[in-house]
Image 1: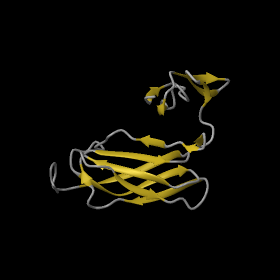
Image 2: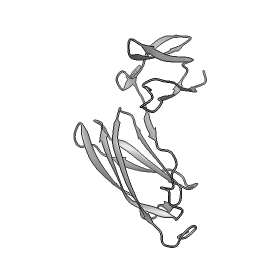
Image 3: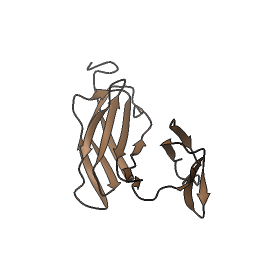
Image 4: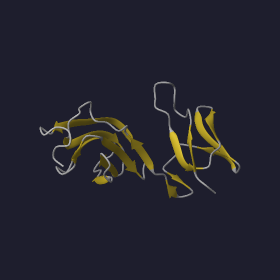
Length: 159
């Protein structure tokens, strides 16, 4: 059975981003009594309940759009600050320009909303940045703060 990606209006009231389900073979998504459901040839499934399906953890991923922070110059980041509500560790991944993803493990030491500072390698620099958050547990992002440091050498500098 081939996995398909489905975009739906689950949780989308026009104010929230659209939820994307991947690695599930749903052919329809919808809401029944304010509960999100997925449907395929084997039945009707209630979504967003817990962190596991048949004792297999869901992998949750949040991906920001590729950005150059509205700056043409090459840049690097010293830190990323993230306000997150979760009870388990997660990974922040960064890719710059056409590079591979670099993973930063974020250890959680308490429950609930917390501010985490992630130091970013000084070797990681470029113009276009991609950032994603991945976890085998649920999480809610409250905010992400990023202050790029502009390289004075301009476009193509530092490489």
